[in-house]
Image (cartoon, rainbow, N blue to C red; front, side, top):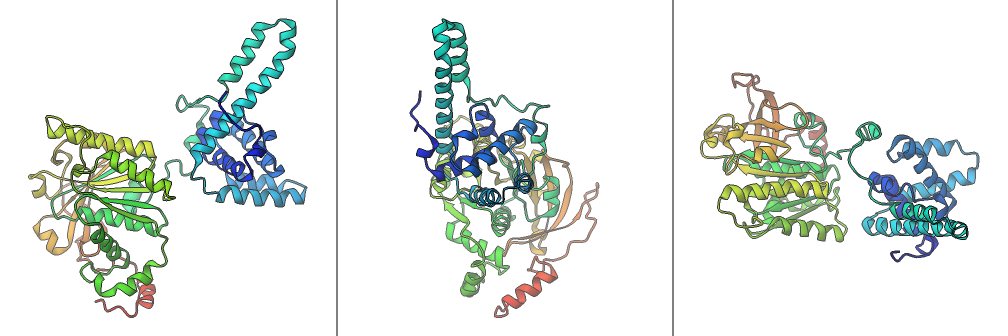
Length: 456
């Protein structure tokens, strides 16, 4: 048997709280140890109650219970002292920062397996006296198999409730309602989103807009830049969040600093030289950040084509395919959404609406990503502050639509103002951006907060 302490008391209450956190939040972990965990292992009477509720709920619905379930069941109790203890412990469980969850889950699994084997050995004593060796063999084998990974896939009937579990994809919304609607809430865990566009068309600004919006909602973001300097990317975030043109941010440092004080320190910008960093470099940095307490909810890579391929192939297309398959694999492994951008080819840069066949380097990018959108901007679009978004591919809904967009590349403002008809003509005439990108009521709030700003 693998080494483990003799009782959960030896691990302490903090460890037990982390175990309960995993039982409630990690369905795969609960599924794996369901047949070897027992409320009797726990010391605190409230912990015993929580475990018994978790197990009974899982046995019926095949998913961990929600906080609402605990709240209702707790109200049914007659013991007021127990109610208070359960509420206090549930608060500790849900607020627990389980950064070492892998260690906690592995250690608890080992502990439970050892307890199961000890129990089997005790049951075998009488059978040994009776010479029931086959029965002993069956009991021991069953104990050894208990707690092994049972994830053979999604059981269509048994796992019905899991399909409709709230936030099963853990979507990170975009700043644009129309895109969120197409993605059923946003790019989800393990998804890979890609924005195509021509040189100087504002692709990198689109990534800034995605990151800034996620940051404003409280998500943790890591932005990898392989083209622009990290400090300049930081200034772009300043511009996008405050709606001060990037060329003017240096003149409003104090106001920007005051505005940013409302946000948590939830953004890391990491710069690598082009073709020097590989996907393993990115993965290593994400793990290092996680070890230091920064568990990213969203990854932005500007852009994948500039990463170092895992091995040198004869054709550039093969190198790109390796990078894009690897990026999708990284998103799946980390269960975090990844957005990136990519170039269109020379012909695509001249098109009013960029279709999928204009992807630069490799058409296989179309097959790999979960959501693809092109951003087309001709010379007049750049002077008028306009452009078009074409939905090239969408695993979560409709695609093929084209939207008219106003774009301000001085502060990363993108506004969808109308859908194109089948002939490619805009249904709504594009308007020049007003350099605010905010609603009237928001304007009033910002005007009051930034009355010292001198912005036209």
